[in-house]
Length: 139
Image (cartoon, rainbow, N blue to C red; front, side, top):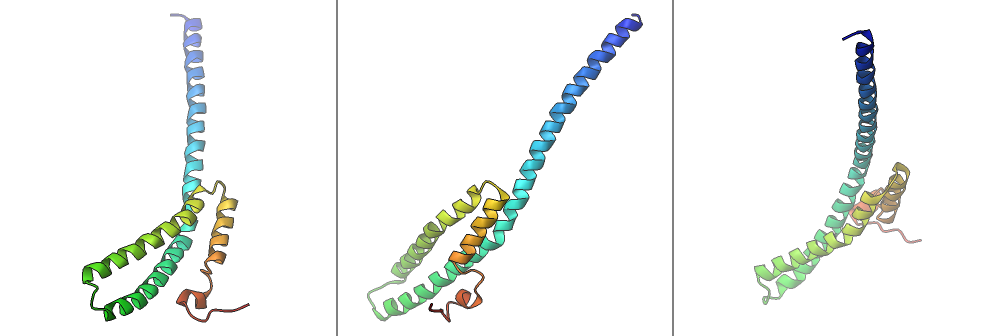
């Protein structure tokens, strides 16, 4: 081997390292973007929880009313009342599926924030009196 052979080996190794460095940077940027998207998705969790709690509160209130009425009629068994309970849970879950999917599909942080704001407004999640199910305002 002579100095020229060593220079060629060094140049080849340097070029290979440069390519690997570019690939590593690309991978790093992709993973960073993925992490940022995941972190931003966490901002939706409080709104999702509020929406689920609100819907479950309404479901429970209406179910209690229904159960009282149905219990007065001796023709309904515990099994049938449980079926009504499952039915109410199923309806609520299906009703919430659309808004939850909409939140997950938001492409940018701005769109996700807009969707969160719309849902909060639509379902009056920030309205404390509305959250208790009382004091409905008329406009």
